[in-house]
Image (cartoon, rainbow, N blue to C red; front, side, top):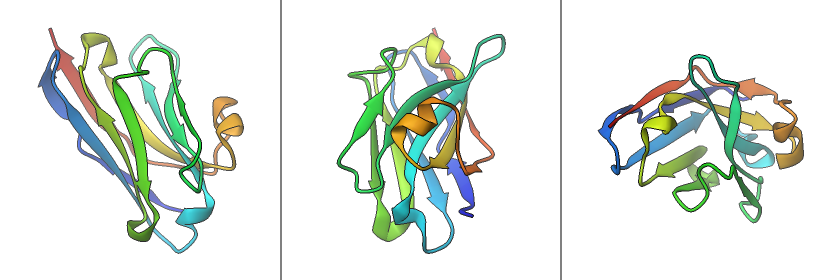
Length: 123
């Protein structure tokens, strides 16, 4: 099992940027597909972005496509989410997750789950 710790959240004005980081423990990080979920009060959990173990394949929700970029550095056991042109509707707790494939993450199935980091976008 991989242990995940998110960081980088905060308060930002609309149109601004944030970079989230997810640090993973262990030596098996490179074998996992990684994803970022978000959840806001009164809304359903949403898979925002995902990246395959090799980094070749990526997924983005329509709501963030063109604004967010997911990347990973397997040598550092870290996955990132660069968030640009932030909107108030991006406000949520963002969670890092590890799974088997992008398809299984889309189904809500994962093996590890981080503690989350709060992102608040003011209007």
